[in-house]
Length: 397
Image (cartoon, rainbow, N blue to C red; front, side):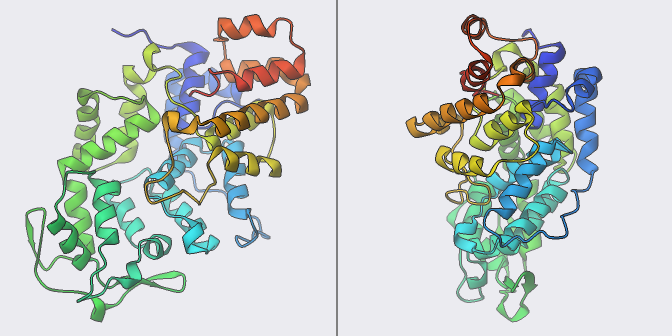
């Protein structure tokens, strides 16, 4: 049986995966809960409503929607809910670079935040009616007699089933089923005269099927359970889950009619999640890296300069590069991105030299790597913080 991470290191591991790391203002409370108590708190907080927006919030100010979401991540309230919204933002990727309506992107984030931990079919139904997604995948052009197949294809390939689990005929029929699903200004509308009400056959089901029928068909398929199980495991647990591990989570999804909270419960309590072999096995993306660094150094909000740093690393919230989402794993570690990570560490080191011991504790708990320990012995405060945040171990979650 694999050796498990225990104690404060296990709690730190959990909060890096299910949140954005430990911060100076909440570390003691999380450590006192222990691992099981921390898991339960994260799951309980999924039901907490998102904070109210400030009265002067204007989504059309450049960078406003990015700033307020990053600040929520740094604050660490309902961390798993924010991390799940971030996960779904990359899974159901749409971009303001095409939509050019920040308010719609913020509405989409709220939908991920509210529906992301419940029944997967309900989340897909929300995405299918989301105006940002409708515009991004040309839903307004999908009409009877001239069906647009963009959403029907991506709904299966990227959102529910994965490549190889559908046919071209399924794409065509699903496109027909979603005809008439569109938007007017900032609202979803169904235009009956644009809808193809004829008989369709989709994954073996025949009838006058509409978009909601498609959602229930797709999210009930075993291929969907396995596809979502694998994505959850690769994002939250480790990069190469076994068939048995995927089958276990797929079984949970089938038994609970796609309940994401139940799947996460099993993932976090699984021995594989805390196995030493999977400890620090995931490469942090820019947002994870920078938000975690701000929490560790005690920054209360995201500094404006850090937006440019994340952009140069390759990630801007609400602007994934394509419908396939962002890179993952070693895809983040190109030469330009690595240089920017080192610059970030240096800048934060210079700004937080006086709290170096605290930063080291929050980043590594009781598990400071021996190779780093030796380098820190002769370093001053600024260098200690920079070395910690630039270390290979800190780049991993």
